[in-house]
Image 1 (cartoon, one colour):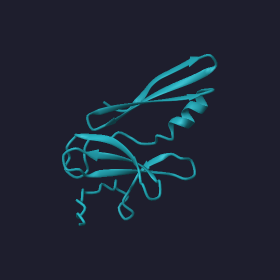
Image 2: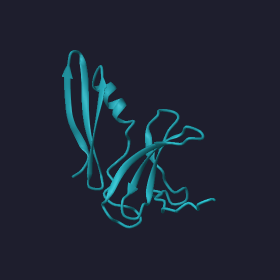
Image 3: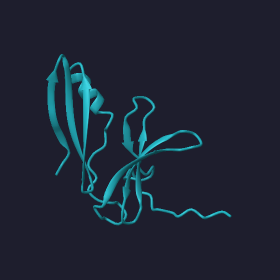
Image 4: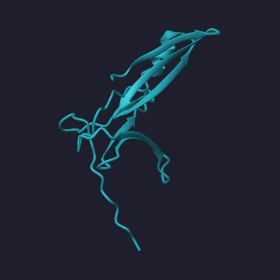
Length: 123
């Protein structure tokens, strides 16, 4: 299943656009409200991620989206996380338009999947 525009509807002078994204075996449905189609499309572009069918490290389809905020500096992150190897792919947020983009390797331009590294316990 590929991501697709799911629904465009209009009610009471407002318009709503539905969009479906596939991450592994999961389907995520997003909806965007606006005064017209242009506003809906502009909002939907902030979720400028595309479907990810498998982990870039272990190639399983057991993926999920997770979101969190760091305690120290209050940065917000969204990641594609692998349930098998615990690897992850970070989505970064652009300061210019608040859109999210997949992190890419600076040298190759490929998606920058990160292997899970267990933190050392301090006593």
